[in-house]
Image (cartoon, rainbow, N blue to C red):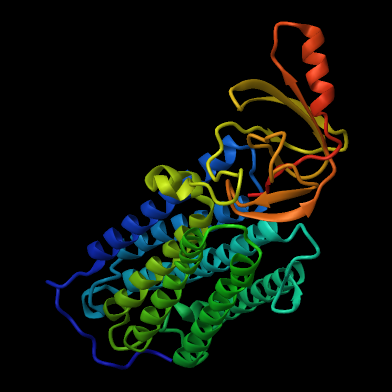
Length: 401
């Protein structure tokens, strides 16, 4: 049905430029965090599916920003009475496209976070949270997220009949689902999944990790910063009723659209924060202090060994008790990080400490072989020392992030 409300006009008012600035600022901030994340991951040769998913979500966010600019070019942000009918149709069409991009950014971001959880915690079947295997919980929640993504995307695209009525209200006989109930239902699904994703790793952080209380609180805070997305979603929800008003949607809808941009890009930023510990180690020097006996958060030397069917062997230079040593290992599994392993002390255990980027550890059984070849003048003495310190099992740091 056609819009019958009186058209509001005030040519002096145009909120479009502010909307563009808002979007560009937040998308640039999100891209900066994603760039840092990818730089760290590429440097450590640890790119995974969670990184690919966050890149896809960022592409959708960039597309959303571009389409917002196009909508503003055609009059979005101005009063409906100041826009010609052809331009109004174009502005509302690009707004419609922006809503699709919004969903294509929000839900893949959630999937990326869950893939990150699986990468960090899900490789060990014995790890449990809330009385269930963590891997099963994460996969189950990911399935729910994907199903909601598909369902809400289909409803969003086909909310009006015919579809063209979404941006062309002059079509006779056209109708749409009730917008306010639909938007509130969507916001409820969005917030509930955010809360579930935030709560999922908390038992592991507080129960399994061998780290100091201060660092545990910091790590928890980093994960809980994702709760800010929930706050933004709630703020956005408060603008829905005003923004959906048929009397002046191109002007009143600016508030909702700008908070949509904030939600999209803050979600991307929060998805990157847990993987930026190396940056935090530089910004907060004490963040990398000793956490458990003989183990440091910030390694002085490390090497990554990507696994394949044939075990890889590499050598790493390290310093132990003022002696220069070579460390050679053979292992199978995901990426392995070996950090300054001592030949004695608490680190020489038969279990491995697997962690989040330098210093967040869980214990898993790993069978490996470590030989320390001391760099001495006499070859015979060096071989003698090597035989003395040869160990059938040794501690291994396995970086799964």
